[in-house]
Length: 165
Image 1 (cartoon, rainbow, N blue to C red):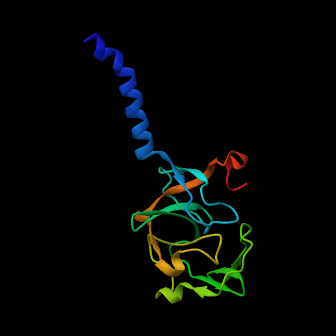
Image 2 (image 1 turned 120 degrees about the vertical axis):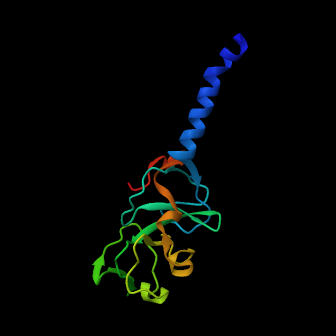
Image 3 (image 1 turned 180 degrees about the horizontal axis):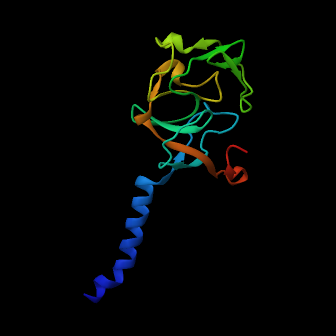
């Protein structure tokens, strides 16, 4: 019985870590160059699984065909999204994007068969618009397929901290 009591603190620590990783926060690794120049292949981020309210320009992790994709939300439910002349238009109004430095080819949510984004769906893109598998190819993302948001980089250490700075 004494031997079991010695292991109880370790068992509790393991359970707490498993519960935190399962339900609250977990590391996630950027795979590929679709989020360059802001995030790079191999960057290690903290995924907040509790945040289920997604706003424009949030960086989210999407479960797509059992793969975790790191993307940026640009279109919210009820909105019409269009890119024209390298500018983002939401419901006909220009919205400035300060985090990209590449050209974006013209597109509209109409190409996906929608006039407006349906309830519980989001339009997500990579910051590297020239090299990103995102809503332009795979379609709108259902809210249930968004695992959570991320705004904190753990690795590389030279870039440690808030990714939105």
